[in-house]
Length: 144
Ligand SMILES: [Zn+2]
Ligand SMILES: [Zn+2]
Image 1: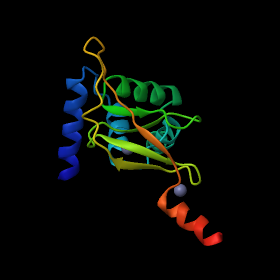
Image 2 (image 1 turned 120 degrees about the vertical axis):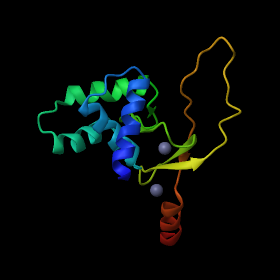
Image 3 (image 1 turned 30 degrees about the vertical axis):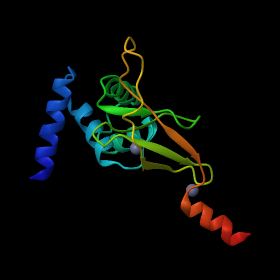
């Protein structure tokens, strides 16, 4: 039952954002909101393509870009290699990218003080930190 409600909720979000709620877009949005690993568009494509072998890479990439433009997902340009995405539903948080394992962590951060001058219409704020995550710190400490 819970999954049906969630799907309906996502469908409503698409419609509210003025996006035609196709099955592809719904599936992409559903995957991103259930995925905690900040997937790249390529990773999203790999997942969606498994269930829908007919869906092209271009369709997936265009849908992902559209969802980000409409604010339904966040695009995070942390790593030089590619943009990553996470759900816009999560509590606003900062990201921490580990230089060792390249993982991206959600870290609590108060974003309320980050504002732009009134005449700038901002729709997305990204805060990120770079460094070494606790796990990798432990590993390096052990080898020293
Ligand atoms: Zn690490
Ligand atoms: Zn995140």
